[in-house]
Every structure is written in structure tokens, then in C-alpha cells.
Length: 112
Length: 112
Image (cartoon, rainbow over all chains, first blue to last red; front, side, top):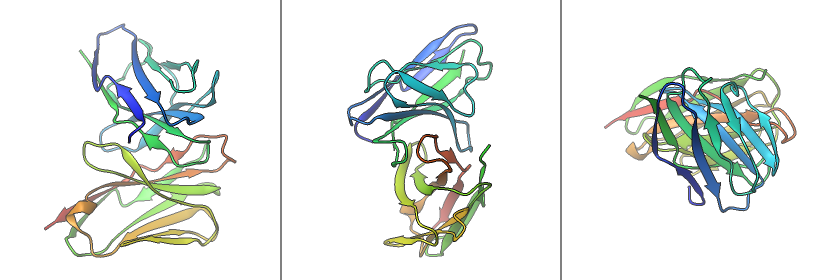
């Protein structure tokens, strides 16, 4: 959707390497989210943030970290502790926590 | 934790036939949202249901929220090739402070 930009579109990670996925929104939304999608599966929540400088773990936070230093930015780091990182990562935002979510185009992460 | 189950996982229909996907939650939901994801794309918000027993229509799409607010359905009348994609329901049991829990989705395949 317009207003949420994820980069890069494709990313390759070497063993033992941390990688950071970018998510920027210009919708002035308070809430932002990170999801992981595996082939043929639904979306699983990794982390979410309702407000700047605050974030909460989702269902599958292990091996991931986030920061929310600015309202418009919510980067996700996939650490070397995440042993199976190959997936499609989707960032979303909403005006408040119970409003519809707008998604970015996603980042496909693969292991080299 | 909250679980949202969606059936069927896959549905093949002939163009012009009707289609229905069902969503069931293990807990009472404060609201339910429906999203559509085209192949290779990202989820796009369709509708949100909030009230017990609520029914909403969007052209050929009819959405229902159960009386107990634990189940929902999406019905498409006279499917068209543009309806191809995966339909997800997503529920929230909290008051907006929690993330959404997505079902695994129903993949709609249409044969012309």
C-alpha cells in the first residue's frame, strides 16, 4: 500500500550474520507491526509497537529485535540466533492498535 | 494464547460458482478483520466487523460476525478470476493493546 516502504525487496544472509530490514511509513500512524509469512501459511506476529520508544513481543519474537526511535520507522533485525530465517517479512502500520493495518510490499529473506 | 482457525485451506471453484471461507476463534473477539492477498503481493484490508451478528456487504462479498463473536465468514457470490488470492481473517481479543492474530488463510483457485 502507498505510504509504507520496505527495503530491500530481497535479502540474503550468511550464517552467523545479523541483518536489518527497513520499514518506513509516512501515514502518521502510531502503531507498527512486523509479521513473518512462510509459504502457504498465514502471518505470524514478531513484534509490534503502539507508540514511539515502546514495543512488545509477538508470538515468535525469539531471534529477532526491533527499535522504535522515530514514529515513522520500525526496523527489524534478524539475528544469528534465528536458525530458520528464510521467509517473507511484512511490515504494517495502523492509525491506532485496533484499526485496519496497511502493509508494505515485503522483504524476502534467504540464507546463503 | 488466542488461536484463529480458518477453513478450508484451499478451495477450487469454477468461475461463476460461489465461495465461502470460515473463521473460528478460541476466544471471544473484540473485532475481526478480513484481508486479501493476491499471489506475490501483500495483504490488503477488506473490512472490519465489530458488532455481534453483524453482516456487511461489498458488492459480491458478504461478511458475517457470529452472535458469540467467536466466528466469522466471508461469502463471494459468482466468483470471477479477479477474486483469486488468499483470504485471511484476523482477530483481536483485547481492547486494542494487542496485535492481531491471523488465520492461516484460504487459498481461492478459480478455474475458467
